Structure formats: structure tokens, C-alpha cells
Length: 349
Image (cartoon, rainbow, N blue to C red; front, side):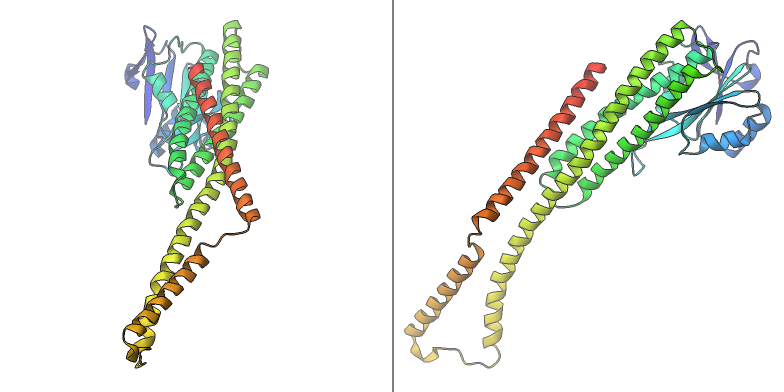
């Protein structure tokens, strides 16, 4: 869908195509692009089909280039989708400067574009294209940081459940969060390269205020990159540690089930044996026979008890205790790292 925006008193106002002010700069907002939208972009705005295909490619990296009659910039933006297997990921946004139009093309909707169209981003001037582009990059960094904070909270909630889990559900959730941080890391690095190209390019002219904004955006981008990379490494170690914990929990359950199976199978074995036309022992001994059978049962129960609860070599117990202690310490350390990043994010906000 294509929406046309113009500024009135510094605020974006949606307008019909026929009622646009030709003298004012127009923001052409193309989101959830359809085939009809692609046709309009090609015919009316003379955008090359190859560039539209690049923008709609989910794996396209950030870049800036001079096309025939317009300047094309591609930026990676963060996305949250609760219905997707990996809830947090990133997408390319194409920003095109063509004469009196600023055209943004995106194959889906995103939080950054919603913030712009809802006038939540202040001091925007459509007539200053470099500043408009820098504001998009700045808003993208803010959204990256907010999503990283949400990922952090989800990871802490999963961590509490994993300590007593014997299934893979929580591990898979943690792996999906790890994938999200990897996607974010790759996209933020791509945006970082774009920022470096913007400083060197001659396609756009930046004034002193734009340069100051660019410096601030680079700082925010580096912080987001550092946090995404830290979270990715932390989640990877957490997955390994909690995988071992789940394995230990499963071993304990299997041990209990094995003992229960052995105990239950003994009476079944005895009744099955003497149920095959086999004469019962000590039948003619009366009370003495009952005493002998009782003593044998008690002895058998004691032997089974000793076998099940016999002590293992001290070295094995010590090694297991050391491993468990090391795993617990690693989990506590990772939790402190996540909490420290949480405090850092809160200070930044």
C-alpha cells in the first residue's frame, strides 16, 4: 500500500494523491508492497525493477548508490513479529531521493516507520533529505536497543524455568532468542558500514548539524552492536549450560523409574513362576514355612536396597560435585552479565 505524506505545521499529514501540493516535498510511503504498488513505483517514479527487487530481498545489506535519476539508500531495520518462529529479526528499508519526493519502500510494516507517520519523531524536515535519512538510522538504533532489552527480559524468564525443566521447549526458545541477537548483530554491522560510507560519499551534502547527528548515531550504533554481540555469546553459553542441567535432571528421573521398575518386577516374577503348576515351597511346614519365606523376602529386600543405594567411589562423587558447582557458577555469572546489560540499557534510556 502506498501512502502520501506532506508536512503541515511540522507534522506529517496523510493526503490523497490528487490533492498534493506540487511545491512541497512529499514522502511516498510504500509498505506491505503489492504487485500493483511495484507497477506504480516503476512507471510513475521511474525506479528500476532491479533496485525494487533488492529492497524486497530480506537478506539485502545496507548500502548507498547513485542510480539513474535518484539516490538509493538501503537500511536494515529491526522487526518484532509474535507469529514468527524467530520473533525478532531485521528487514531492509529502501530510501530513495528523487527530485521532490522521498520514497521509502518496505515489504512489511515496522515500528520505525510507524513512529515517523505517527509524528513521534520530533524536528523532522522533509526538505532536508540527509537529516531525514540520519533520523531513520537514529530511530533504528533506538528500536534495536528497546528490542534487545525485551529479549533480555525474555531470557531471564526462560532461565528460571530451565533449572527444573526436562524438556527441550525452553532450550528452543533460548535458541530462537540467540538467533535474534545474531540477526541484529549482522544488521547493525551493516548499518555501521553504511554510516562510514555516508561520511565519505559525495552523493549527499551534510551540514554541521547533520555531522553532529551522525556522530551521535554512530555512538548509539556501536553500543547496540556491543550489546547484541554480548547477548549472543551469553545466550550461547547459557544454552550449553542448561543443556547439561536438563540432561542431569533427566538422568535423575530415569534412575527413579529404573528402581521403581525393578521393585515392581520382582513380585510379578515370583507370582508368574509359581503360577505355572509349581508347588509352593514349605507348604507342609506351617508357621515355620511362613517364617522362612518372610525371612527370605526381607533378605531379598535388604539386598536390593544395598545394591541400589551403595556408595560410589569418592572420586566420582567429587568430580560430579565439581562439575555441578562449576555449572551453577557459570549460570550465576551469565545471569550477572545479563543484569549488568539490563542496567546499562536502563541508564541509556
